[in-house]
Image (cartoon, rainbow, N blue to C red):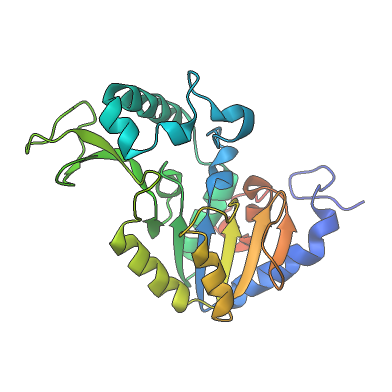
Length: 257
């Protein structure tokens, strides 16, 4: 039987060929872009708000995460985000986050994380360069003037406008600066690793296909891969797979298992 570091039979032994190919692509990359979605954070205990996990006190997230919902019931929306912030503060980046961060810090290669997540777990794990396409739950901003606010207990901006979470809601455009820098990174990459995204939330998902269009090698890590050929698919979760494909993440003596 094939064992894995740390003992026990390896659940990924049947995917060894794909893992080896992914590791080789990553090691040979000139400029690596990592694109992550909700599945990256799920194993840290953050709900994806789909299916049975999708309700909060009877509300669907898509009924709360809109400008109209905030304008109609600001305190209900703020309560949901307070609950989400409290949840995020209690969880930790998992070993997939840590392996990725260690690789980005110590590989000596040019790399960038582009994330659809708003939870800040990539930054907490130590990733040095993170682009947040959908904003951040870790700060507020004014719904009127757009000014950022770090005091999460404040309700109004100095301009008198209401403060809201600093995230992108349904129906809102992505931050222009984040989009421009993401496209710049993707257009210069030769390898992209896509992790835990359904690739259905646009326009962010279109960035994955842009990498394919420019001829970059694309690796997908997902329990149920969704991207078309010629993507290299690895069926599995971020926590399970990333410590294996970002093997130089063990340079600090960490056990990848």
